[in-house]
Amino acid sequence: MNSVALALVLIATCLSTVHTQRTFTLENDRFVRNGKPTQLISGSVHYHRIPVPYWRDRLLRVRSMGLNTIELYIPWNYHERYPGEYTWDGMADVFSFIELIQELEMVVLLRVGPYICAEWDFGGLPWWLGSSQIWVVGGGKMHLRSSDPDYLEHVDRWFDVLLPKVAPYVYQRGGPVVMVQLENEYGFIGDAHDKQYMRHLVKLARKALGDEIVLFTTDPPPVVEKGSLPDDEIFSVVDFGPGWYNLSDAFGAQRKYNPPGKSPALCSEFYPGWLVHWGEKMANTSAQVLTDSFSEILAYNQGSGSVNFYMAHGGTNFGWTAGAGIALYAEEGAGESYQAHITSYDYDCMVSEAGQYGQPGIGGPNKYEMIREAVKRHTGSEPPASPPPPTIKAYGQVDLQQSVPLLEALPQLWPGDGIISRRPLPMEEYGQGGGLILYRVKVKAEALQNGAELDVSSPVHDYARVSA
Image (cartoon, rainbow, N blue to C red):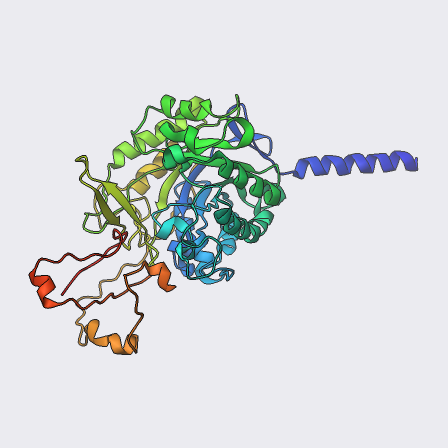
């Protein structure tokens, strides 16, 4: 009798364990969560672009569109601002942000880099990788985003710090993180793509996060092969904007690089708006094209298509965190154009930088309401209630009564003669990771009169203003 009772207890315990086991897998070209097919309707929200008091507010507004997933980057340079010194508090408290997402009953697509792009300074890489004066291995000489041993030494150290912190948040271990992305649009590297580097990142992630977590890469459809790894090594997904590609072609490129049955359709960056460079008008893209294309993705493959809005709420590039890009002029041989991103990362998306629904400041139809209605039509469920709109105040005219010319304030900002060097060096070589540098040189009058040219030793890879 006791043996029978013990057997019944063991059976009940096993059934309980099976019932509570958390799984997230790729099966029959579907995402399967705890044994049931699921569709990821996601939006990107970046903790490092939102003041902490607004984290919950912005997530609630995004969730009220009917989204069930949040995608976010972790910028390496936001947490290791100087070699071996790590910051995890305030706006850098990414794990409190992840816990808040879980509290709101959403799951997470986590993008750990080490390179993230994101229109973020240096694509999330620490500035000191480019300095030979900070005494880091390979500083200023290493080949970034490659299997260069010097670069990998720093990546290994960073991942050895970061990934064990991520591990408890993996879905199978009770957290909200269902997938982890490595690198970002690596296919744009072109012929320099380094499969050994990508395999090294996979090895690091598997060691810290386990074999159950879904690891993935993201690339535009034409460069998936160069940006990812074949078959079961990692899950390859694609990104694109509204109307950019025929969906069969886009998701076909994804399916070609994944094993049969393990390629659920996912557009990991679906652009509701666009970024803005200094001197450009704020982006204002078509709400109707966005909504129609979004609905097509949701309906794809018998209503199983998954999508992430990049961005759902953009936020702000505080301080010197905004990145920049280089654009080639259309005319052959005309050179390059430096394009710096503005402080606002509003992105013309559904929840504005100020937390408003739609874009009352930019204009056009309300993307928030249109996307919310599209999700409701597709799922047949009423999205969570929309929080009240934020209070917007007009402060009227502000008169600035005092000012100090920057050059006149230099003796107070930097007493002394400054740093003397034969040629102007990049900012990193002076041990500075951001901000402004004033370079001064005395030139003989007769040299200027004879048409002398200014030699700055190498092309300017940032914004420079020359005055005499």
